[in-house]
Image (cartoon, rainbow, N blue to C red):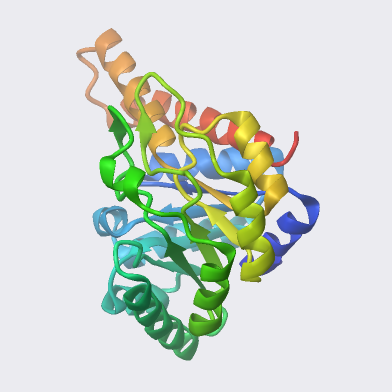
Length: 286
């Protein structure tokens, strides 16, 4: 089975993107796996600090690895949005395949310092674990938005030169740049357009694969342009949460006396699976 970095490199060569989908519950994990398996595409499961605290750090690793081992399938696990060295260490020691060091709110110098320390620690524990860093601020919560947050609107995008220096100083494996994307989905509207030229510039000068965060709410055409310009992995979370919530609400309204969780969660699982299938098809030109 190929490693995660090999899967990402293959996607870049093929001008496709690896799907990264966050979970908070086991039904969502099965939905994502079933979608990926049906399309025969690799997939990354993401859990933020809050999500992995809810499921359990070691328990999340055990769940994903049990699926990988039983089905001999390229399903990987990422410690999404990790804000401290202590939590980086926790994730790497637990057996995650990759970890994101999120210093996006810090100054560039502070972000470099935090990321460099995280990379050195990670590679000392397990050199195979990939380390991703965020450069530029795109918000911090996967939720429905009335409008793009003011602090995101005011934040500046990194240049190719910025990212080149960042990668050189930190030795990070992957970069998630701010290129017009935003965490969360704007209600009743598409999210802002991505800056495709900036993606291309950052990929050419940065020298490492690029990851797009805040994928929920972006138009299909913008996704295709971003992949062609150099994005090799795309994160989706809010879109999944929205589908999960709406399917659960619909079922409970129609079945107010139902109390069996596995029956209540089945429509939510199906709704999440549909979202993931649609996204994987788009990312892979299917």
